[in-house]
Image 1 (cartoon, rainbow, N blue to C red):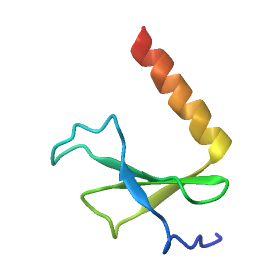
Image 2 (cartoon, one colour; image 1 turned 90 degrees about the horizontal axis):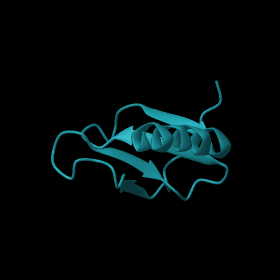
Image 3 (cartoon, rainbow, N blue to C red; image 1 turned 135 degrees about the horizontal axis):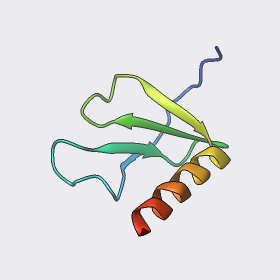
Image 4 (cartoon, rainbow, N blue to C red; image 1 turned 120 degrees about the vertical axis):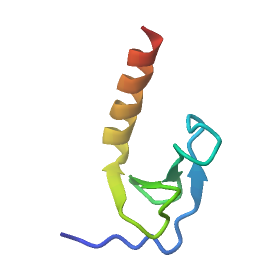
Length: 68
């Protein structure tokens, strides 16, 4: 598996996180062609990395589900 250098990633909390201490997901927007995602409570823990198109499909499906 290829290692992705995230040392320059700029993380932000998702606008859909609860804003508190418990359910905070962070994403990095500045990694070309990829969307890294991590748990803000474990910033040194594992990171899931999505291809940009896959991430857009996922977010679109979640939005559609929440709209119903």
